[in-house]
Image (cartoon, rainbow, N blue to C red; front, side, top):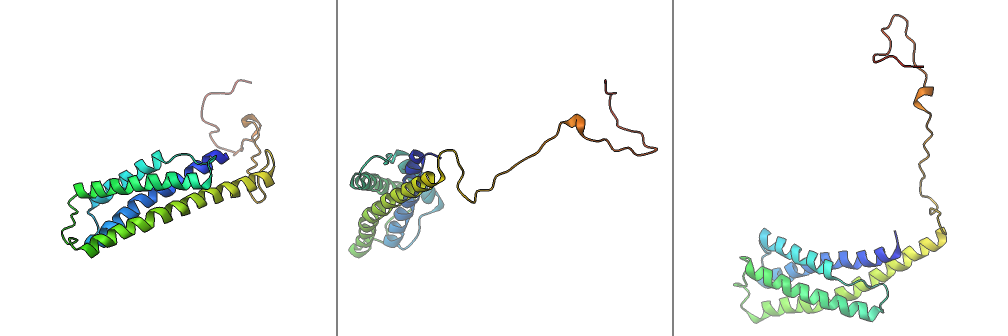
Length: 176
């Protein structure tokens, strides 16, 4: 696997998992109830969309990567808030300022903290895969990776068992 693929997949996967988790947790903390299955599926859809639009970050500085991930997470949280509003999940029990403040605080803490952790994890995976690739050398497998060796013989060279009194091999005669 190339380093470009590793650097692109890990932050995207993390964003796709964080967006619906934080969206549902924040709304659950505000209303005291988790969203319905339909609302949860809509949040997962927003998470998938956020993962798809997360930019590739291999050649950017860690600050640029974090800023872009903050943007994607913020838009993703707004999307989760919108789809949970479309669902039957309402903030009827959360009309007090403290419940709405809890939801806002959850969003405000989780977005930048999540973005920093996602960016750092992506960089760490890039460094680890680059190190393993360098230590392995070109065209060599890392130590400890099992190799499958298969020895084959041509089908005509296989011995045929001879059983006395048997009918023999069924099928058309072999031309020799």
